[in-house]
Length: 131
Image (cartoon, rainbow, N blue to C red; front, top):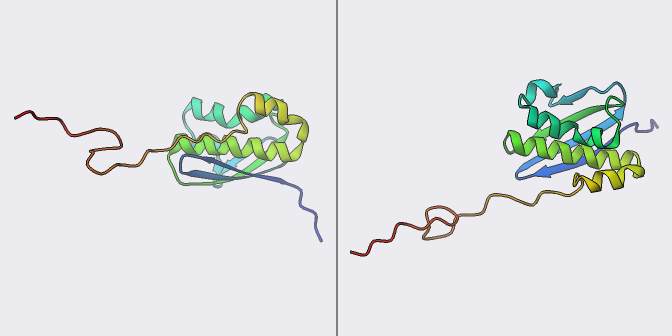
């Protein structure tokens, strides 16, 4: 049987879910089959994706293959970052203090609050009329 040569991590943010596989390589990052520069145009999102590699000083040492579904662009970028951090942790346990210190292993629990009955949105009430 062939031994698996990758580490896997699942990242989540809002309603986005990213399945990340990292393997030793040249530093190529593919998201849904395309380079991450094409998928995420914003510099802020690109920095969020590469932050786990910057923190662990492994930029360019791993090839990354990602499948991401759900949510919007910001949620997907956060999910990818979370997934990469988890995969790096499986690759080498020495990365844990650095990743934990930058908050990359913690899932961001913030999500959209549900709408309540009698209100226009989650907390916005209809305008009060005296007469």
